[in-house]
Image 1 (cartoon, rainbow, N blue to C red):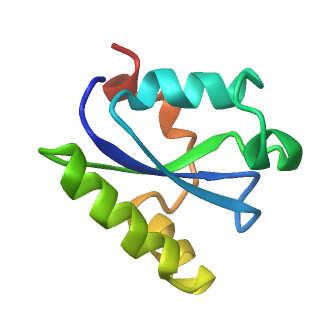
Image 2 (image 1 turned 90 degrees about the horizontal axis):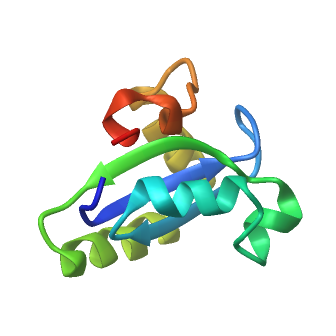
Length: 98
């Protein structure tokens, strides 16, 4: 789905977290899952899409990403839990499989 999106990846429930922003969340998460993105997510096995938040503009998404990155870990976990209590991999959801 090509829309500005802030996303949170996790290694497992309550595991290592990564906050990112993209214009194409399905493509970007696929890249993370397939080891095509060098760095933190590849090193730490952070590949489960736990949270996705869509925005009308990339500027708005970037502002929100920076805000969430400054949050305490507990707040990020709560954001995921409130929106995805079963910690499903949202990559598998129909909304992302366009």
